[in-house]
Image 1 (cartoon, rainbow, N blue to C red):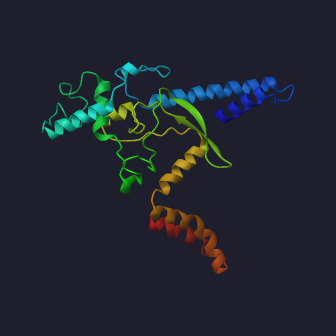
Image 2 (cartoon, one colour; image 1 turned 135 degrees about the horizontal axis):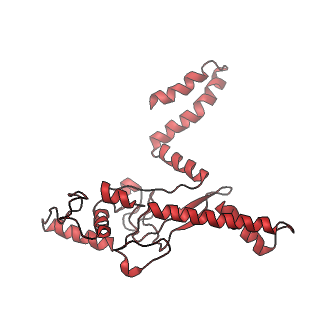
Image 3 (cartoon, rainbow, N blue to C red; image 1 turned 180 degrees about the vertical axis):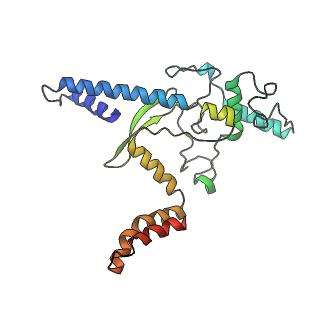
Length: 248
């Protein structure tokens, strides 16, 4: 719907809408705008950018941004000085250890992020150049954004999918959820899926995350089709489908 709304807007601008279809076109544009707004609010509600206070979806204040890199430097300094305790180590304490936590919950979440959620590129892990980050399979460093916005991404020559570009104040941090950070206090990555094609692509990416699983996935797809043709019968169709599942 987001994509259709944008295409119709472009058609209206270029005068390509047939006479008598303008009202229906405007209705489609309106629905597309509402879908865009819903996607933005939904994505922003489950993702985390780092401010010293709650920052509404349509607001940004650079003065209120928490510098996660500075918190990480302080953590390293404390570690080098052997000053590691409940007060200085954010994941040694629970969220309810009030006397050890920062009085500002947003700063405390940023401290947890600085210790456990920052991605540093390592060639053997993410395949990137450790100095430039180029080639990282997790797409780090990510682009900083002041606002969450919906977008239509060109996947290949024939496919497009709707995605949401999340508000981001630190380029080396994944998409984090406020409540996971506060109560679970560990690394995670939230993905907003608002398009059927995006969901299928997301699932496929994890099913084929390594070469081993890629081979297994290919076997599951190809074996039930190829085996009857090779043997000239369909008697083993169900057995063929069961074998890859057993291998899992």
